[in-house]
Image (cartoon, rainbow, N blue to C red; front, side, top):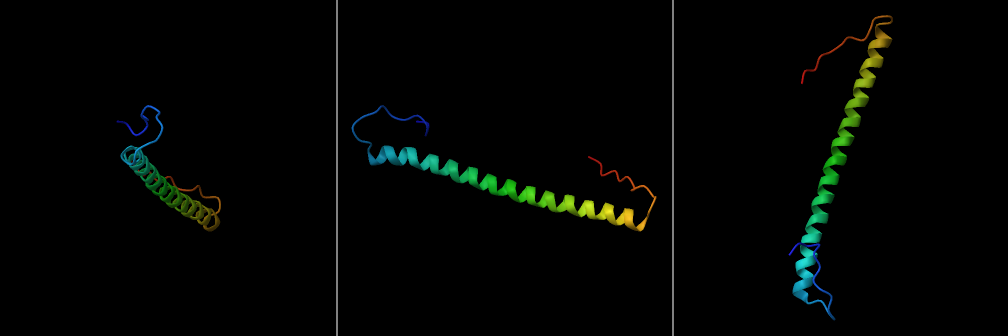
Length: 76
């Protein structure tokens, strides 16, 4: 049974039914949280790299007035 496919309503849910529903839902929440944390770490690293590139360009412009910032082909 899919964790989102709830059993037909009845007076009480059994412990086995509770565990069958709760376990997979908790696992999905944990997986989503882990993915969110990983994505956040990637975004934070990206922001740091972007800031480093910005500062490098500013340094070039300050130290080489009137000279265009060199183009760097980073490939694919």
